Length: 97
Image 1 (tube, rainbow, N blue to C red):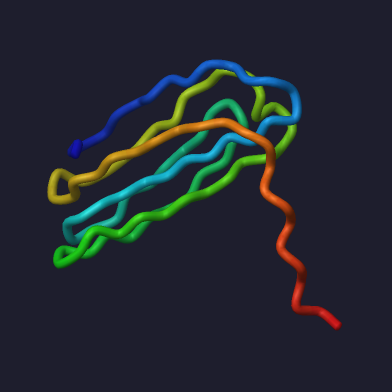
Image 2: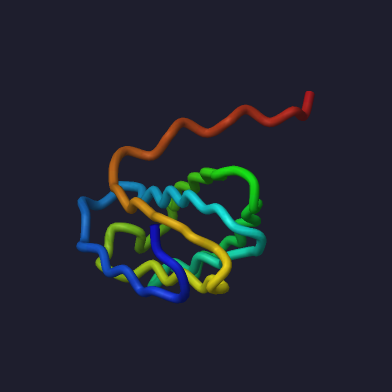
């Protein structure tokens, strides 16, 4: 587990691959995950009493390029992250009838 702010570089992948970022955290607070160069970010709310795990898949144009994932976190939050590549997951059906 890590604390504080960190930049994690990742290598390029095959065209059409999605980038998957999984984050686990524990500690009262919030972390912000920023994926460059695709300009995607998401917040993760962490709890003091349990480990929370969140996964997001980035399947946008440019996700196959090399880049970095930046995590901004307070020192009270302990976190770990995994970055992987693979085929995009199938789209979830919408609830619209």
